[in-house]
Length: 419
Image (cartoon, rainbow, N blue to C red):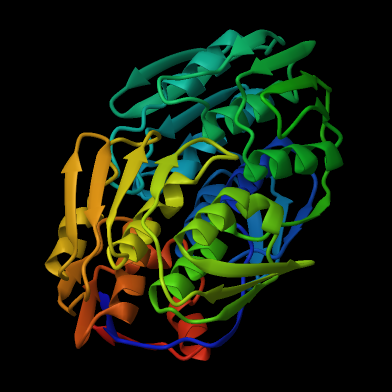
């Protein structure tokens, strides 16, 4: 396994954002809905993409990937089993369930794994697909499903913590080949869902309202192959905004969609940053003094849960008391203990984290527990005195394309070493 060795750094320059991981993975699953070739561009070369390629190959697709573009072709060999050894590594792989039921009439998909950030049930996925007519049982860690025909339905898809991005994606994909009209009420509004809707429409699906809480899908008999460009990764962009803030360094973040980051930009301004937006670039210049803020994670367009850890690291060095409320995954605070090892003063109480700013962070040996927590520890290391060592960086490799190289290009002292 690898580790990162990081020293306190001042950053300056331009960072180019990669394609969105959370957009690409459901779109890759959606290619199971067609027997024709699909070409997907601006794909990030990360571990989760490589894993999804293996899943598609197991399910009978031929996949060619050059590090930027995916070409996904049909073969004569088809399977409906997505095995535990692959699905256990990431949650988005569960998005194969809907397309398999809709196109191949049956599926056996392992219950998903991914980051350890608290309970993330699949009940909304199963509820929505059952409403469409699928028969589903859970047996020995697998979701086993079959359906002669799917039929459109009016489905309420709200859960205990709001809407679900992946459940919305699963139901939307399955409904594309269902008979009649499906209405998804309380659908997720994230840009990743909107992009999936656009991809499905390029395949020939009849979808209206993607990106809003009410999505209508008129089922069609067949979907075609198509070409599609992946949107920029808003979470990667937000991570580099946090890196700029915590190191008090100006950065230009380009190849980004600023409208996808409105809540993050607003919070960054409240903390203390001058931000200028020009086309697909964000210019961020931290001010000389910062202020504490309160952050509440919410479904889009609210503040993303996937940036909670990174901004907690930023606030750990902001004088005063900040409050972070986690309303998506209330147990997503594994990074608190590791930040405290670096000298932060953070107290957790249920879904709340009380962050009392300290003057300095200090380098330490810390352990990455999940994808976004590992990013938080990396940017904390950029602002900490002495040397920081971040272990288990395979977590960060799942979702960030060459993060250490991008950081070094703007002046970071970060090095990958064998553990």
